[in-house]
Image 1: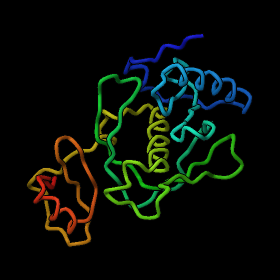
Image 2: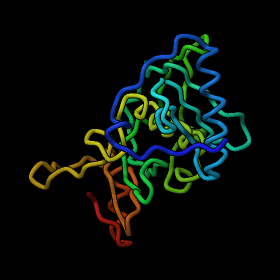
Image 3: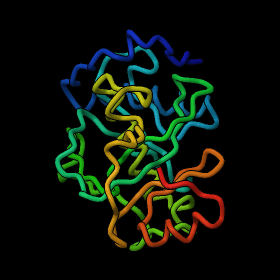
Image 4: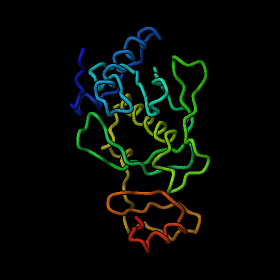
Length: 205
């Protein structure tokens, strides 16, 4: 069976309903996995993206691992550390936006006995490893999909990254983290490192 990815924002902005059982959730998850396979490029998908207004998502950011199924997921803990991450969405073809995400989160679900932690594979994120860190990609994807279940999109205020107006800019300490941008690419790094990148054409936002 072929699945159509929903692009109607009015529908996608409606919060989904919880599933009543793991069996119900698994039946939906099986459809999501098949639909995700059909996209060939997606790393996550939520039930409302295929027209089912139920709280189920699947994530497959690590291609060599089985898909992670989240039923009625609730974020129970988030890290203080945030990152600006470039995201796309199957329901918003052609849109590529920077978002603000937590580096680590913990999620409780109906189908897992214990809360699940998500976060980077690397203990220390650097400019060199951040784009290849599959654990971070998975963590961001989980937040993206849970947003879908709550009726939120990457284009929405509070999800998309928004540059602080110049009048609100304050002086930064050397170890404060700032966002830098060059040719559409963004990084979230310490101010002292940002100063070095400015010489290479990067701009502190």
